[in-house]
Amino acid sequence: MASSKTGVQIPAPLHRPGDRPNFDHLDIPQAGGLPKPDISANASDLKDLAYGLVRVLNHNHSAIGDWDPYLDPKSLLKGLKTMVLTRAYDDRMMKMQRTKRLSFYMKCLGEEAVAIAGAHALREDDMLFPSYRQQGALIYRGADLVDMMCQCISNSRDNLLGRQLPIHYARKDLNWFSVSGNLGTQFPQAVGWSMASNLKGNDNIACSWVGDGTTATGDFHSACTLASTYNAPTILNVVNNQWAISTHESFASGAAESFAAKAIGYGIPGIRVDGNDYLAVYAVTKWAAERARAGHGSTLIETFTYRGEAHSTSDDPSRYRPADEWKSWPLGDPVERLKSFLIVNGDWSEDEHSDWEDECKEEVTKAWKEAISYGTLEEGPHAPTQTMFEDVYADQPWHLRRQRQALGI
Image 1 (spheres, rainbow, N blue to C red):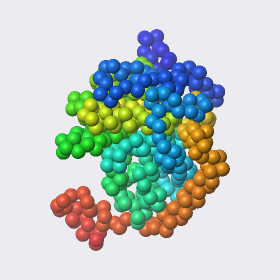
Image 2 (cartoon, rainbow, N blue to C red; image 1 turned 120 degrees about the vertical axis):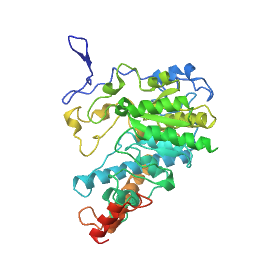
Image 3 (cartoon, rainbow, N blue to C red; image 1 turned 180 degrees about the vertical axis):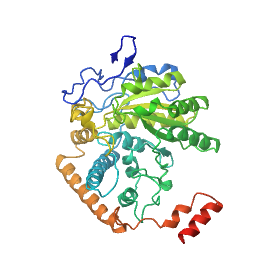
Image 4 (cartoon, one colour; image 1 turned 90 degrees about the vertical axis):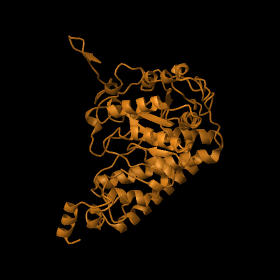
């Protein structure tokens, strides 16, 4: 941080464009070092988890320690395959945006395990309140790629009828709450939903994600207060991918050693986890889910990861960070790490992985061709004009009826 003569501190990243990335300042603990507490443990006894880093996969691609979830190869392969498919989907959609086939897109390169391992650890009837980089969780839950693409193009098959920005998916059938462009709103909404679920006598919980920058907003603090006060069965994820739109995470973290440590003041457990370790993310999410279902309240999870791509297609990261900085990230690539673990255990191979990558590219290409058969961004057809007057008011106001009549629809 830079300091002025008055002692005011102005956060600044360690590396700027043109610098050589170096993450030697990070204290990355060895895998398997932190104990896994009982789900009924008092939050005040779990402070070490907020300042440490839960890791399961070590440098030899082995799973070690108390947090090892001992997942079967079949379920892990589903997770790996979904990460690869998500990456292929992202690549295709980014290319389409760059060629003006859709207006806007956001990739999740480097963060695939955050969403997919999280979804893997939850039940299908648990409600997800995502931010805009959890598309992998939606794919994991079975969303059709064509449907997702049509929403991004806003064509005649767009299930949201052109009422949302691209990638702001909403799927009631998959328990996926609509993504909000006003980031942070989903946190208190998730707490409220989980409270309602509990009051109805249900044991399904809510899980939400925000980025590190959003922790500086009022919605974040309101959600933590609600979660603590009402012992809400909610999982609150802070995805610390090192960068908000163009500001380093130090702007939002302040002097705190971790975002997970912010939970301590609210009296709820805070756990920091290696966000590029699929097994660790699964294990911590599973622990938090079991704790919530057992009536022990919310957990704040900080997934420590790195945003590999631009914030969005409207962003140019070369203006504020070194090129390819994410390739120097000491926690590696989540896809490569899980792939290596499965190969070491004899459950996967390089050839199988290469074949699956090719299959994913073919599937995504086929899905795109089908998606544009329902209309393109430039030429349509789009949702019928009259739909803009529907599904908003139970009894349509007079001025909207008059507007609709003026349009002749």
